[in-house]
Image (cartoon, rainbow, N blue to C red; front, side):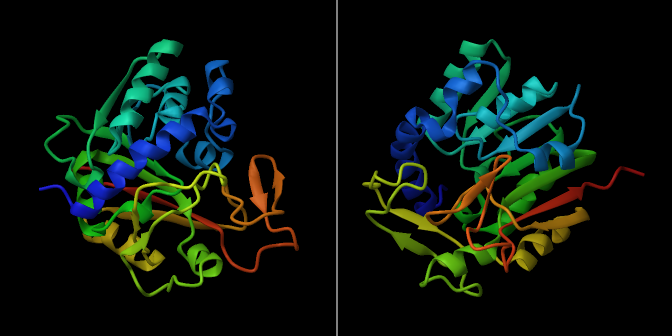
Length: 262
C-alpha cells in the first residue's frame, strides 16, 4: 500500500518538476547540447561504468541517469513523480539515448523491475523524502548483483540543523511544510504540502549494513551543490560559504558493496 505521506510528496513533485524542467539552474538546454550533468565527486568515486548496468533511484527527469548513459552505462531510472518520468522519456528520445524509466515509489519498488544491477546510484537531496530507511536499504540490496556497488552522495544531515531552526538532528520527523519556496526557483511558492524526514548519518550507514551490504568508504565534504543561503561562492561546480571554510560538513558520500557469492 502506498505511504500516505509519500503520496503527498508525489503530488508536490508533479507540481515542482514543471518549474524545474524550465528553470536554467537545471541546465536542460546544455544537456540537450551534449553536456553531461554529473559532478566530479560521483564520477571519481563511482568509477568506470562502461558496459555496466546502473539503476538510478530518485532520478527526477533523468539528467543524471542519461549522463551515466553517456559515460557508457546501460541505465534504468526510477522516480515517484509521474511528470518526472514523462520528461525523462522525452529527454531520452530527444538525445537518442536508450534508457528505461519507471514510475514508482522507491521504497515500494521490489517486484516492479525483474533485473539486478552492477551499480545502484542515488544523489543530492533525496534521503529527506524517505520515511522508512529500512525499506529503502532492502530495495538497494535486492537490486544489486553479487559484488555490485551502491553509491550515494547527498547533502549532509547536519546541514538542515544549521539552516533550519525547527530541525533537530535527533528528530526524524515528519516535518511538514506549506507554501514553501522552491529550492531551485526561490520566487516560486509550492502550492502543495511537502513532507520530509531527517536521518542521522549513523542510521543511514547502519541500515545498509543490516541489509547485508559491506561499507567500503564514507566521505564528508566542505562544499555543496546547493548554496543554502545568499552569497555563497561557486567554484568548479560547487558552493562554499562566503565567510571562509565551512565549520561543518556540507555533503557526504557512501560506497557499499553487496558481497560476492562464494
